[in-house]
Amino acid sequence: MRTIKFLLALAALAISAPVLARAPIDCPLRDAPFSAQSPLIDLLLSPAAKAVLDRETGGRIDKLPPMFLNTQPPTFGAILTLKENATWTGLSPSRLEAVDQALRALPVTPADRAARCARYDNDRPHFNFPRDRGKPRILIFEKINGFKDTPSVEAARAALVAMAQRKGWYIAATQSGGAINPATLRQFDVVFWNNVSGDVLTLSQRRALQRYLERGGGFVAVHGSAGDFNYFWDWYADSLIGARFIGHTLAPQFQNARIVVDQQHPLAATLPADWAMTDEWYSFRGDPRAKGANVLLSLDEASYNPVGPMGTDIRMGSHPLAWTNCIKRGRMFYSAIGHKPETYVEPNHVKLLEAAIEWAATERRACR
Image (cartoon, rainbow, N blue to C red; front, side, top):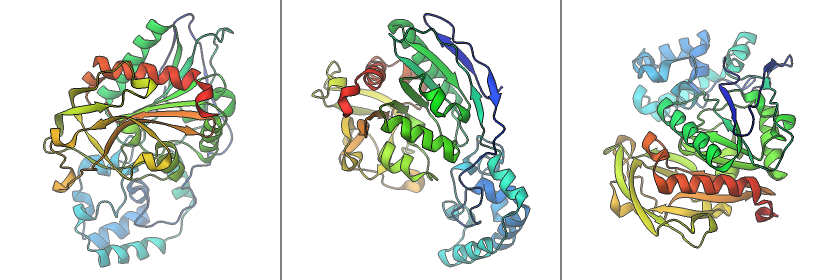
């Protein structure tokens, strides 16, 4: 069952049942024209668009790695575009423009719309929590259409369950986008985006999350939740997260690096001034500080080799790793740490995540 993976509460079991909404799914790209900027999955799902790709690339599209060509989510095809794959397909800028024009000339059929919307859902879970609101309630959100690293998702969830047991939180988890609706969100103090990748919310679900945060809700996210090469929801990348992913370390992928802590920030006051750990290190286009974010953790770029995809230099200079921000009255926290499962038992990172969840759940004055 994709709607609810598990439900857990420390004081009482939260019982739920999914309800399939009858309303049409208002998926974001349902009516968009085909183009080189379309998610690759939408081009592969359309026989007409796939025929254009075969013709214009001389069959090179089929030589892409299998994880790019999978049309069943989770798949890289949901977070990559033809333009993003130009290096793999050998398309020059002029040839890419010709492909783009050929794709835009195609009609978008009812079958295309149905295929595009199939990876979204309106399944609405119902949670039966105790009436006591004395403890924070956290919704772990795990719907993933893009890249899914199951070990990191499971490790993060296990860490949250352990925190809930220590702190007395109520906690529930879902893989249903339909959980992101006003009535369900009102039951929770924090939504935890667990390595979510790919566009997963319908237009109405997007509006529900944005309003929930702007009116005082909490949002905490880790690692892959800001690790997509392409976003099809600008507000999420540019306003909520505040920075766009450009790549991660690949020489090698996992490296030991020094993390520098701003101990003046209340969430980091109990952390050491710095520590070293091994993970896959993200770099971003832009600095979340420009969007008003407060950076708690930074990476010392002299302590590791910041080389990314195709040998690119992904140094940022002042390299943010974890930060908070206000979304009007709502509170957000993001940590780029979290590809290796071991990071979710690393004491300093666990301490930070625990503090961040409590801050997002309870410190409502922080963003007034």
